[in-house]
Image: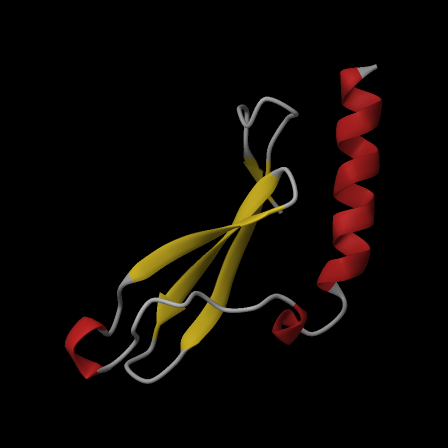
Length: 76
């Protein structure tokens, strides 16, 4: 049953991935030349999104989906 729920979650998030990453607000942390290359994560549903600073703005890098307890996270 958990695999079915995880599969359904991945499918739904996959549909969201086809839309622009701008649909997810970027981190509020400062991104400038002094922290270029820095990475941070923001929570998204039962998972999180990893962002990377390019020296002027945060760019979507990778999304993870986790089980209902916030464990067993897998990249999408």
